[in-house]
Length: 142
Length: 286
Image (cartoon, rainbow over all chains, first blue to last red; front, side, top):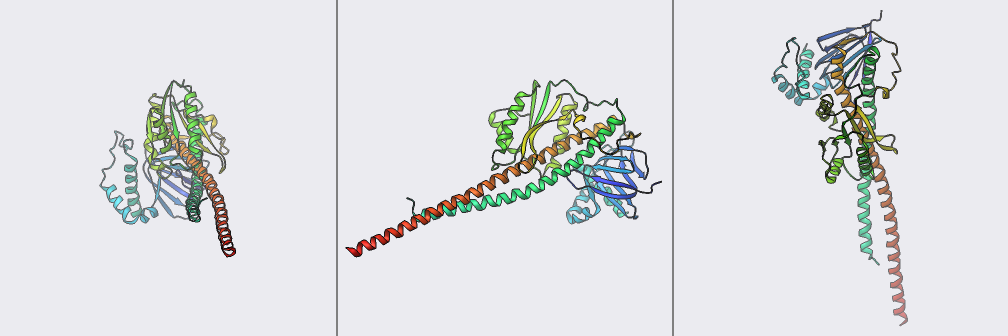
């Protein structure tokens, strides 16, 4: 059985990013979704949140996304993200990023639906981004 | 005959214009390079979105969704994507002429016209054609953020049944020397026009999270947004390419004018010298 699989991250107007991964965790439609090598073909919606990729070198990579899709087929996961922010990009933003994060943390969390799921449908793109950035900062802090 | 001073001033004026057109040509070349890269990246993203649509269609042959089923076209929304600025030869004029013809020949009885770009907005306003929506300030730089509300409003128009079809008119970028205004249907999606899926042709048993219908509800606005994104970047590349060609011609023409003026200047100067010599000789003989 294969121990790794390819993860490709795509976002509009940007180059594709590919990794050889052992595990992938993404903000799925019904909460956090873990994917390992050899998984059955899957098509799922991604909600705003953090994508975590455990590379074959045991290095963990974190990205914030405002939503998108994930297709897993033939041991290859393709993540079509509306937007993608890395921890490095977040840190590179410096003071502006810090201010943005403080504003993001001041925002109330999105309301939960009857199914205890976050309701992102009424959130603007800026609010989704702020929410995803907060989660990314928390995840990066460990 | 113009004096030497007048000719020198003319040469200086044309040279200044030549510097401006030369600078604009260089800027257009750089912007064209960026726009071509953006086209390729957008195409790569769209092809992956199309893979997903094809996966669903292949796995669930009987699957129906409003965005995939053909309807009788009574009302249509036509989105015209045009240029931001002038000084690009016949780029804007060609698009406007094509758009007017395509709109008049469209089979729908009710037509809603939405326009993206400063030039076509001004054109339709001057013609007195009512616009359903106008977004004059959307450019390649702001396209990523500004397209979210636009595509959402267009998608809402389609799913609510207010229109039966959404089409886009824009200038397709074929190569740096070839560009052509085209009309293309965005919704309902024509899956036949999607490129064949080269890999993974075998059928699989997919897990759909959530259900295919809900998944499509979220997929289609993104698909529409990215098709609009591609049309905008293609239009921008075509505009830059047209501007580059126009500015190259202008720079070359300025060079020709300067050469002609220099010839005139030398002729005038020579005539002046000859006249002065003739006057000196005539004076000495007298």
